[in-house]
Image (cartoon, rainbow, N blue to C red; front, side):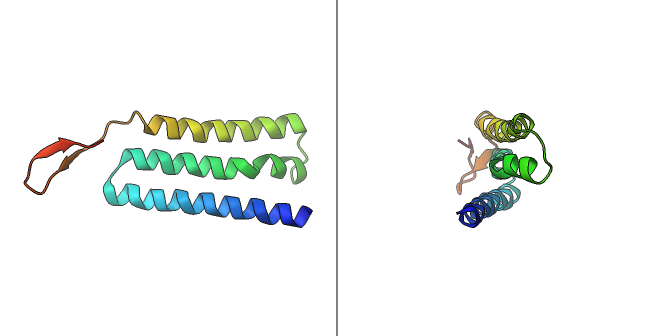
Length: 103
């Protein structure tokens, strides 16, 4: 059971970091601050999802400190994603040359 849980957590972290990496690539391609904030948020969420167990088992921190560290990482990730909703969009140019505000 323990090995299965470790494999599941590793898969979740890898999937989350893959999503973050793809978001980062899209942010650079589109020059989007919104996508960059979302990618950063997914990075913190992915790492934070397993951080409590690592802090507790590997670094021998107390349950309280391990939980506090995990909560901070997850909270920071959620903050980045929430802030991405308020970052102003850049003006997008349509094929006819007219600029419009991106959503």
